[in-house]
Length: 211
Image (cartoon, one colour):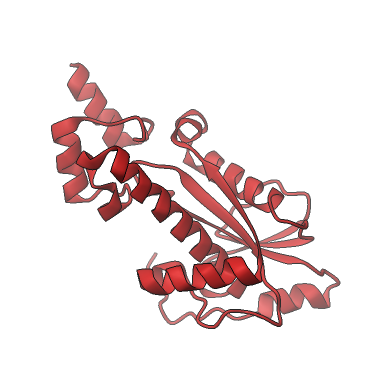
């Protein structure tokens, strides 16, 4: 389904939860479900309603410099938790279960527990709080948008770090996604330990090399 670029996040979902008696509302989102390499990263963010950074939006709609700037503001002004599911967990559990696990870890790492969560997408982890899934939530909720930025920037930094360790794959360029450059690097070098062997393209490559 095409993304609706006209969506602009606001604070109405959070306000609705507050009106129902909840006090600490966490937005939860992830980055990195689709790539062929690297972890999936989830973030939980509880915004201070009196100090919400300007310009929060779905991380994919922001430039890298704007994401980095907002990341610094979010980390300074909000309560943030991050959960990281590594490649081993992804391959062992599958990407959906690993993502939900990372979301749970992110919520658990908040400095103070939230009592309500707004979760991007249509599936929620098992959390010790009331939860609401929000399809296209990063374009509807400021808290989810903030979480999308934290998750994206955190993961991008991880992938840039992996690029220094495994320079042949160009992780700093594509962050593990299946670009033409990445495909060519895989064809020449085979997968490294950070590639998701449970993903069909990597599994097919391994099977071809083993034949």
